[in-house]
Length: 316
Image (cartoon, rainbow, N blue to C red; front, side, top):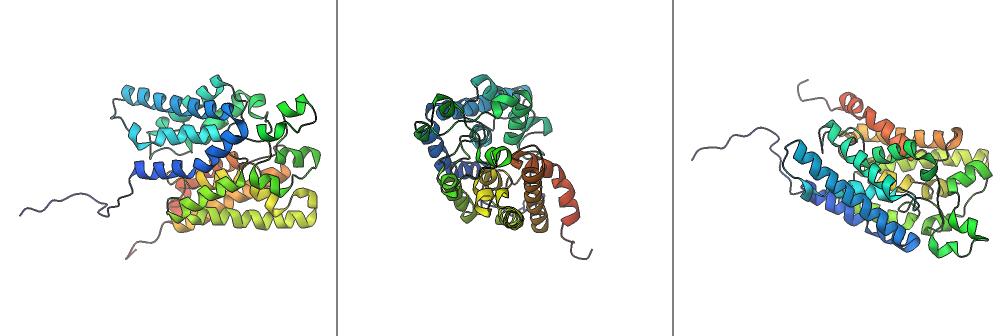
């Protein structure tokens, strides 16, 4: 019987791209549910807009490139979903549409498509929108369930995020509000509880590597503890862990297997560096938050980290 000869790698796995993408989407269900409960139809339309635009953009690009359709791998759906979850509830439909197109076109296919992209596409889309519509992307609202308790209509329409309150007003938001989501912010980042549930699921299922998440969390804890001892207005450990886009960033974006290091040592370096940059921006820059910039910055260094942390081959 003739033997079949094929090129490496010879190790096989049942974990296909569609399976991995669908698992991440499933892990985001709690955050999606919270976003709809907190922000109502605005969240629904924003999520649908980003997902539909991302999928349509993917179809058009693949046809232009004369590539087979890979819509069923759910990567475009996940990109659109993640982008929607890191946008403010008041984001206009045209901005969400442009951001989704930019995420797929530039963040993904400009580098060759899935598996070849250097940067996280959803974060690239948000970075583009921050540059194009800075006021829109920095205007947030209280969750609708709590906006009714605002003092006046202006407070109900807009509110500062916990990190902005700390940075500019020296006001620390209670940890209990951050944990459940009673704060202003992007639609998918406000409820720490829902994000933690989804993140634990990914780690248990071994979809996300725990090394990146643990190294980021450990570094954040150490730096924020020192900062709090120096000045309580710097924010406590729980404040920095639960506020802003930290949890959705480190659980669903920093752990992206395409844009993060493939070596174990490299993942620790990546995680510590991401956390350090986040805290530097939060403490010393004019911006209240730095999760997006830190992950994108370290995405650029991923090839270099892989190069210098690869294990020595046998006999080398």
